[in-house]
Length: 176
Image 1 (cartoon, one colour):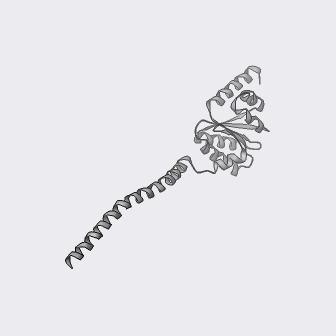
Image 2 (cartoon, helix red, strand yellow):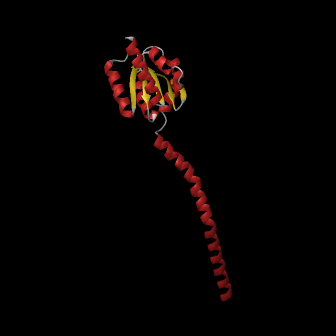
Image 3 (cartoon, rainbow, N blue to C red):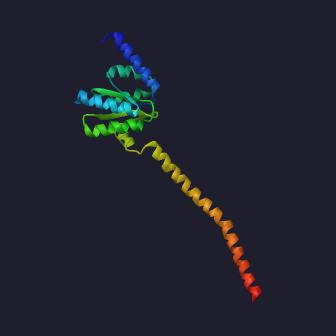
């Protein structure tokens, strides 16, 4: 690779690093071209971009930036996945692929301004989707509120029922 080509690749990587919040580094040693193509397709459909990079060029691109901590995970042949949206969907695809192809190893990542190790990425992939988590949170918040509303409605209702009982009792005493 010529110096001009290397500079162009570093510039492209720097632009990609600045344009996305989530980056996943993985090792792919031993995967066939067909398997890598399947992985690229699955990641693209989930909202990410899978790219095989040279370690030294990635280190140059990440130097001085927030993601420079990722360089500690660069061992062996490395591929980097850039995710501009929700990283969990991409991690689910990569985790499922890694279960089927043990050659794919999630080494580390930069997710939501945090440096995560491979095991933490797998745990993150095991989480339910964001919509489901938000629905669970809403359910947890609305349960106590619904109980509070029921208690507040019970007070006037009980008062009315008590007054009706007293009125019936007095009618019964007046008639006797």
